[in-house]
Every structure is written in structure tokens, then in C-alpha cells.
Image (cartoon, rainbow, N blue to C red; front, side, top):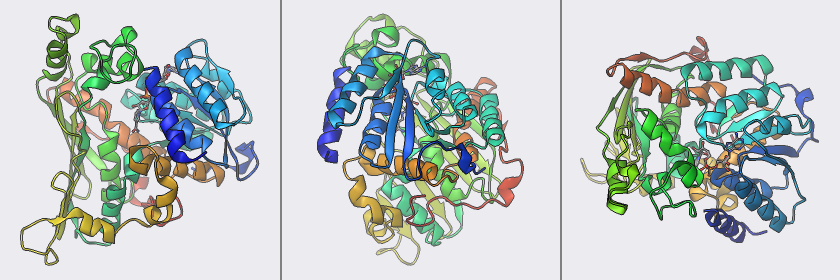
Length: 449
Ligand SMILES: NC(=O)c1ccc[n+]([C@@H]2O[C@H](COP(=O)([O-])OP(=O)(O)OC[C@H]3O[C@@H](n4cnc5c(N)ncnc54)[C@H](O)[C@@H]3O)[C@@H](O)[C@H]2O)c1
């Protein structure tokens, strides 16, 4: 099936619900990856559509606690012409039966955040590669436990951080590696996305149409909104942190040493509900999470990294990337790049496109056509491909367990910083000193990694 029509059908369907492993661990024939999916909501379905498009992927089983999600997935797979898959449901532990499948090589986990840690640990213990959606766990201890489990079982764990594969993000990485920005000094990124219509809906459509959350809503409003009531912090740091880590060689000759978070007052969500439905009970809730949370991190090599979480106010989407060194700077909001002595005009931005076209990453050059039509401007193809290639070739994943937990643990550390009066939080060294010798192997060439 052609990607475009296939993806379109997927979108319509979703909207209507409103340390290297050993070869012996692998069940399927070389060249074919047998996949199980835990959570087939909106994001899980996007990974399903990627899986169905590939000849080297066989979807063996899916698990979800809601029939509405399973039904969409079931019908979608049937339309693709692929064979029926085994389904698991019946409660939050149903995924354990999926993990009993000996012929599943790897699982894609796309459930609400609170389930990621346990499902990942159980999957690794069952001998499966884990490709888990952002974020890894809710506490610092859970992040350590994921590392421990991966080390003990030898099963790789990858955060499916798609923004690491965004085209401009990768072109900037290419430029960093070729020294265009000089020695890096400061990096920024974040998640600046008006999520109000994702956090509230009418229980029929996944986007807006009402001001409900929890059991009266569907998709992310069912579970994500509650986090904004319960905690104050950068609860979604990986889209910004992942790329910044690659620029700064974090866990590969560099590391985060500590962080501190600040949070503004929280007004956006209550104001949104009040505007759409004056007097509604959800407009009277004390949403604990500040509207704009800013986290500063120190790096062992002296760079600073600034991350923002800004999802409750009206604003255009921007992840706010900034890469700045002794010779130049990229700022994505400015759509500009400035390289000293090479810019067209002194102290004036060059259009970023000029540079990014020239320094397009080899991976994008090679796979541009294949990724056409994939989610988030193609980057979803790359992250899925990287995971599948790692499983197929029985190698470590390009975003390994150390990098995965490092980008994710910023969430609980940020919460801890805010809880304790903006106190500085020591950053755990999940590599236990190995960061000094480790090399940054992420996307070195066009081989898929
Ligand atoms: N990388 C990205 O660009 C991106 C985009 C969207 C979402 N996400 C992430 O993907 C994950 C899922 O988000 P979503 O938008 O698909 O949410 P969703 O609410 O649409 O889907 C979650 C699904 O998990 C199911 N589920 C809940 N508990 C379960 C359990 N114990 N076992 C099995 N299934 C269970 C739900 O029934 C639902 O179908 C989240 O981590 C989210 O942050 C990432």
C-alpha cells in the first residue's frame, strides 16, 4: 500500500475514536523482526503504520486495555492485507501475556507514562528489545532500575525520541561535527507546544471540542492532564534534551553534572477551560504545573543547556533549538544561522535553509524518499527504522539505555528541584564513569544509525 493513502487512513481511523545482546536471544529468522505492541492509541497506531509498511517487520501481537483502540488497530491491520494478529487485553497487566510470546523479538511501548517503567523492565526480563515512547519512568530510581535491568539481561532499551532525527536537527549535528559552530558553549531546546486541545476534549475526538479530561475524555486527555494537576516540573524533556545531548556529546566524553528548574505561575489551563466553558468545574482546578518551566543544566565540559516546557498557553509550535559556539549560532525561531566570517552580512542572520541544504545529514539524503509522508515531517520513519535495524542486526540501539534514561530523568530531577525551592540537583551518572571513554556513535553516517 502506498504510504500516503495508508497514513491518511490511519489518521482518519485514529480521529474517529476520537550492552550487545547475544544472537541466541532472537527467535525470528535473520532479516525479519517480530514485533509486539503495547499500547495502540494514537502514537502506537503511528508505529503500527510504519511496521505495516515494511517487509522486514511482522506484527505478531498487540495489547491495549481499551477495546476502542484495539478495534481501530484491528481494522487498520485488516485493511493493510496483513494477517490478523494476536490481541491481549483485560487489564493493566495483560501485556505480560504478550511478553510470554517466545517468538517476539522486540516490543514497542506506547502507553501512558506511568506504565512505561514496569512494562519496559518486564519486557527486557522476557528477553525483548524495548523501543519505548518518551518518557522512561517517573522517578530517578525507576531510571536506575531500567539501566540495571538492561545491563543484567543484556537487552537494549531505546527511547523512541524522534526529534533526534528531525531534518534540521540532524543537519545542525552535521555542522557541529564539522566544526562550523566552533567549540560549543551553550545549547537550548524544549517542548513549546500549545497542548490545550490535547489536554482537554469532548470524549469523542482526540483534539478539542470540549473541556473534559480523565474518564470523560479520550486519548492523552485521559491521563496526561492529571500530571499537570499533580506535579510542577518539566514533565516532557526529551524532545529538546535528546538533540542537545548529541550536540554536546553527553555520555560520550561529556555529561550533565547538575540542573536547576524554575517554574512560572500556572494560569493557562484554567483560563482555557474558563474561556470555552465559563464556570466549568475544570476551570476551578489548581493545576500545579507552571505554564513555563525552565531548566538549566551544567555539563562537565563547561557548556550550559537550557530546556523549556511550555504547553499551556496560546503559542505557535517551536522546540526552540539554539546551538551556539565560538564560531557561530543556529536559532530555530529566528530561522537563522550565523557563522562568523562566512555570513553574507556582518551580524545578520543567513536563512538557516541555506546552510541546512548544504549540510543535509547523509541519512536524510539517503532515505528522504522512503520517509516521505511519515509522521512529524518524516522523522518518525527514521526513529522506527533505527530501532528495527538494530533489532534485525542484533546490535545496540543508536539511542542506548544510558542516553535514553539521561534525557528522560530530567523530568523527575526537575520536579525535585522545584519541590525543594529551586535547589540544584546532582545529575546521576548512569554510565558509572564510562562517559569518559564512550564515543558518540549516533548517526555517524548513512547506515541507519
Ligand atoms: N514522540 C512523539 O512524537 C509522540 C507523540 C505522541 C505521543 N507520544 C508518546 O506516546 C505515548 C502514548 O501516547 P498516545 O498519544 O498514543 O496516548 P493515547 O492515550 O492515545 O494511547 C495510549 C494507549 O495505551 C493504552 N493503555 C493504557 N494503559 C495500558 C496498559 N496498562 N497496557 C496496555 N495498554 C494501555 C490506552 O488504552 C491507549 O490506547 C506517550 O508516552 C506519549 O508521550 C510521543
